Image 1 (cartoon, rainbow, N blue to C red):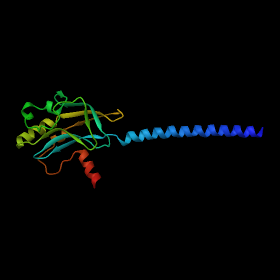
Image 2 (image 1 turned 90 degrees about the vertical axis):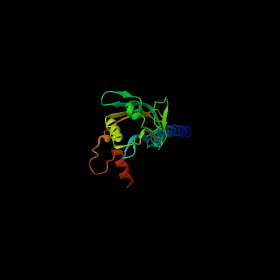
Image 3 (image 1 turned 30 degrees about the vertical axis):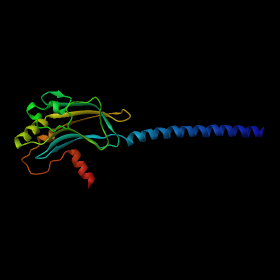
Image 4 (image 1 turned 45 degrees about the vertical axis):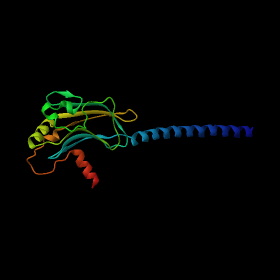
Length: 186
């Protein structure tokens, strides 16, 4: 009788320990999946460059995983809308743009980690052309939807009013993202 009671206690203890082990394993698996998702999360930003001889707008993926661009829309303050920044440009400015930009929206667009995609690159021939581009770009807003490998969706928008800066004042003009990057690098 005592022997049977010991066997019963041992069996119940084994089932209890096994149940606890399964619960711990399931929780660890959930944590591992959560960690994996975070460790390959793409972090996309829109970076703007406005120098005397070079103007550009690009998307950079500063995360560790690839970003799959699902939707990309450009709107202008006058209500016009396009799938690419190039399509939104006035005709007289299109010939100034480099050829290595997104001129049409592809079916699948993936930006790898630490890569950039130029939406528009310009080397203005003179001050008048540069100012025309600035006046156009300051009225544009970009809307981007992208996903990670787990199909989790991220949305963001950026108004390009940075190009409407007062160029008559002395000083350095940085986008908020560029300023944060400079602060982090110090």
